[in-house]
Length: 142
Image (cartoon, rainbow, N blue to C red; front, side, top):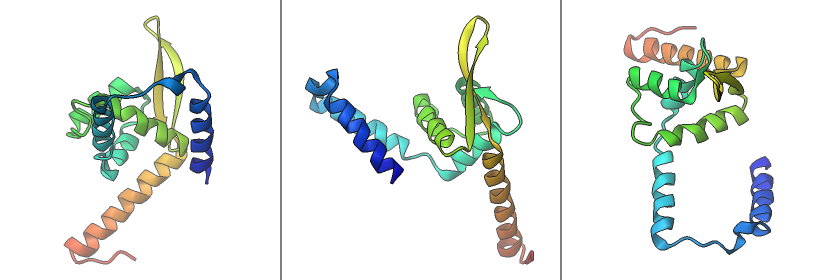
């Protein structure tokens, strides 16, 4: 419901803005479609990796990308800009919080997992452990 309301307001805003007379070429439309398709390739495990990477230490988007690469998460390699819409979505869902700070004379945005994000991460890890014990090892836990 909230998404529909937000979409309507955004569309109204765009319809009455200076962008109302803009149009995209077929090539431009294809580029947007390709980018959107790439964005859908992010897996739930990647989102959990984002939460885990931000769990104990706040990071900039660049630091997060570097950390994910080091952990073997190559989803964002070559399409680094795709990470930011996911961070924004996690922030809107209150799994991540951000703030602007000055670092080396530059204003940068840093991200950190919220308690809600940590709870989801903990529950997911526990569920995966239960499934592993039950399915792979043949044990039942509770």
